Image (cartoon, rainbow, N blue to C red; front, side):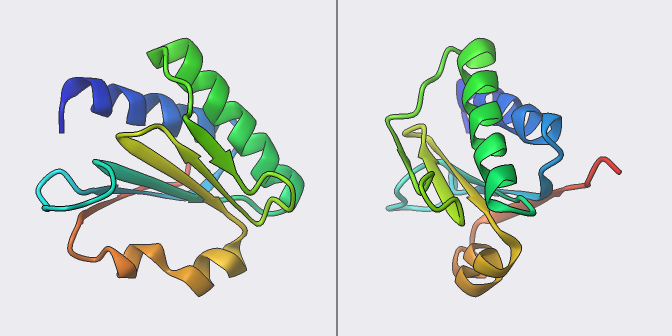
Length: 120
């Protein structure tokens, strides 16, 4: 993964941690062929309003820290699963039950997965 992508992921992670997002996992696809991006950042919020706040924080930290804006954001209306597309990195912010249902970590199990410890 290149330095610019790593820095973007760090700013995304900081935005998640700022609003107390939980269970952050970074899936690194850089060693895999034919993937849609270089990495996923996956996390959980505990309510729809928390998911929205996490998405706003990620957007702010990515913009201010890395000069990055998402090319697309989907899911803000019902805020059960928000996806933010930064081209090389896609951020997935879930409610816990929706995250468990879609289970992206196991769907992409051949990627290098890094679990970030919760701050509390």
